[in-house]
Image (tube, rainbow, N blue to C red; front, side):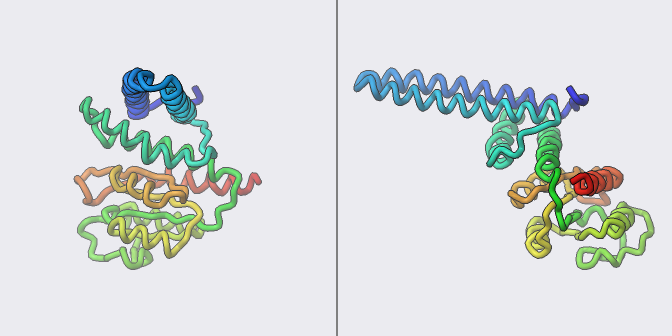
Length: 257
C-alpha cells in the first residue's frame, strides 16, 4: 500500500465489508424465496428474478471494488459518474447503521469517510484550473470571548493570534482566496451560492462537515475536521498547515498543466 491505513479508516472498511456481506446475504435469501415462489407460476418469472439478482450483485460488487480500492490505496476512480453521490447517500448510511449496532463511535466513521472523500475530490480537481477557491470556516473557530463578530466580515480580525482565524486570514490573503465564516448550514449554503466557487476547503465538526459535503454536491469539497479542546462549538481549533498544504497542492497541479 502507498501509505499506512489509519485506525479510523480500518474500522470504516471493516464495517463496509461487513455491511456488504449482510446486504448480499439478505439479497440472496430474498432471491431464493422469490425464485421458488415464481417457479410455481412460470419458469421465465424465476429466470427474470435470478437475472435481476445477478445484476444487483454485480453492481454491488463493482462499486464495492472501486470504493475499497480508493479507501485502501489512496488512489481512486472518482471520475466514475455518480460515484461520490452513491458513496454519500448509500454507502455511508449503511456503514453508520452497522457501526451503531456494534457500538462504534459515529465521529470515527465520519472522519474516515471525509478522508476518503478528500482523496476522491483531489483526483477530480487534479489537472484542472479552479479559478476560485472558497475557504469556509465555522463561527466556533473564533475565540469564544472575542468581542469582534467576524461572521459579517472576517477582515475585522485584528490578528491577536489567540485563535486560528489570524493564520487563516493570512493564508487567504497570500493566495488571494475567498474566506468566510458561517454560523450554520443555511448561511454556508448562501455563501456557496453567492461566491460560486470551483473548490471548497471547509472546516467543521464531523456532523456539519458531512452535511455540507452532501448539500453542496456536485461541488468538490475538501474537508478538515476541527478539534474541540474546550468542548462542542467553543473555541475550536484546526491544523492550519494542512489547509495551506492543500492549497499548495491545488496550485502546483495547475502549474503542472
